[in-house]
Length: 281
Image (cartoon, rainbow, N blue to C red):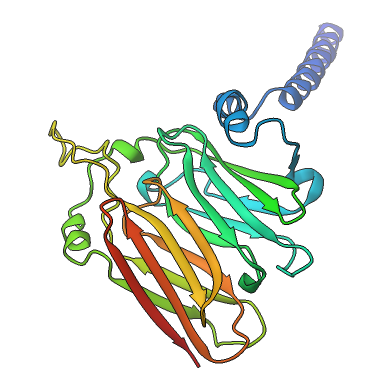
């Protein structure tokens, strides 16, 4: 009887070992989430060719140019924080001159196009976005030498673009265009400084009902351009879509050579215009 038990135990161990090897091999082949494949297909079949044609795009893992960070699972799909980190400073010789930010499975995948200058110091960004489905947040950085580099991060979230707005939207409408700016840390001249910008705006998607159960969908109305300069010199320009969350919040860098004024100009899809200044001294 003991021999039978030992033989059976050894057989089970062999079978278990084979199962572990097979499972490990499968884990190397299969994606951690099958929806990642759907997101990649949406990128390859539609967005890539339409935006960049047949230009070569280097993966971040190969070139280590940028990193995209996003939560594994968004706590609030309508306020999903994302951040973009570049691996080198902005200089006249080499800099990121443009970034395309996409959310592959959103109704409008483009979040925004951001144009930078060497005066930004670092082409890093942080913002809050709407995520409508399980998808990659994907960033394509174009360098001044023409190279394209891609970073991405997968986010699990649902329904942000069609979710009814919160009650605080009334405050956003009443104070539309009001801006607040805050320098993160003490000012350091000739070095990249981090700035926090917040703008009051409902950023209506056009896909949202007025309230739960309502069939009334107000037309899209959102911040669509930003122009940021320091003492008249351009720092960053942005073309935006409704993928940016209500009351847009954006962090970016700029290099103040001397005391001066940071100016932010914004427009929305109804041709409203606002401007605000922040004294750096």
